[in-house]
Amino acid sequence: MSALPLLARRRAPVLTLGAVLLLGLETNASVPMTQHFNATLAVALFTVARTQVAIVVVLASLAAVMVPLAGRLTWPSLVDVLGSGFAGALVVITAAVIERCQRDIAAKRELLADRAVAAERRRIARELHDIVAHHITTMQLMAGGARTNLVRAPDAAREALVALESSGRMALSEMRQLLDVLRAGDETEEQPTTPQPGIGELKQSIAESCRAGLPTTLVVRGEERPLPPSLGLAVFRIVQEALTNARKHAGKAQVSVTLAYEPDGVVLEVSDDGVGLRPEFDGVSGYGLIGMRERAVLHGGTMEAGPLDDGGFRVLAQLPLKAKQGRGNE
Image (tube, rainbow, N blue to C red; front, side):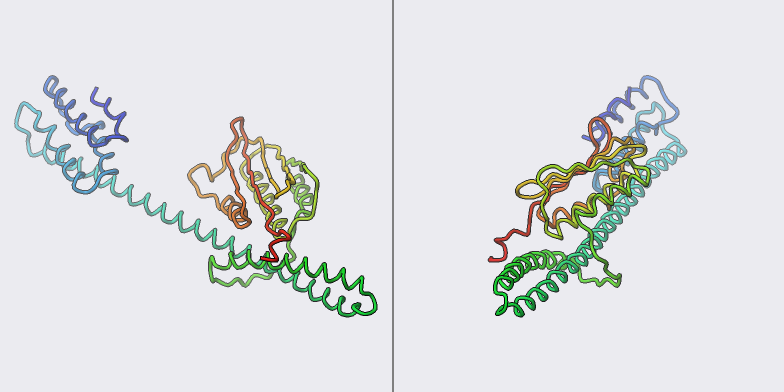
């Protein structure tokens, strides 16, 4: 009967402790008990120690130790007092140790998550650097070709200048994104860079997933069109990370990758019908999801991830077109 108030211990821990003490007094008055600091009282005091300030915990501990002894018909012995005091102190110390450990774990988890975000942003910065370098090199070649053909072939020179203008606008957009990423940190990276993949490499990634034992299909909706290199890279990396997570955690499953072209961007969905639980949704930080979300946010988009109602897991990203023709004139 005295354990019934524990149902409300999370909403009202102090009131719950008071109710447990009163019911304990009533029970002890009608049926004298030899053990006064029982499990119900320990749970109630433990909850108070985990949720309340120090002064409240001290007063609650004194009440938990003395009130049961005061309900006895005979004067409590020294052994009873020491036993109850030791039990109360043990409960409070245990609660304090657990609370400290959980705070340390949460702080370390937050630190690891921050490091993962910083590392992912540095990686994105390197990739965008490669893209901007490619545009600048192309612009240099086009400018040289236009200068050479300016007199002999003015039409060819005009086409080269138009392409040069478009490439310049694209490079400016990529450089703005690069600067946004570089503001996240000043650490340098010594890893060499390599040519970066894009939309064209999606089929290769799907084939690798199938060879790895995870049946994967690719569905493309809408009219396919060229995407800015950075956006194509973001799509590829999100698919790559989502397939990696599926291979690790989905178990025996099938994966569907859907890429939908929309007038103002692309929508990417990666879903599976597996039964495995992702660690990101089991109390552990998911650094893969953090990286995918960072990529989506970098491009002004959104990314959602979570289990499906009928089983499986889905990653849904909406990425707007950042490199529009009008941006070069801002």
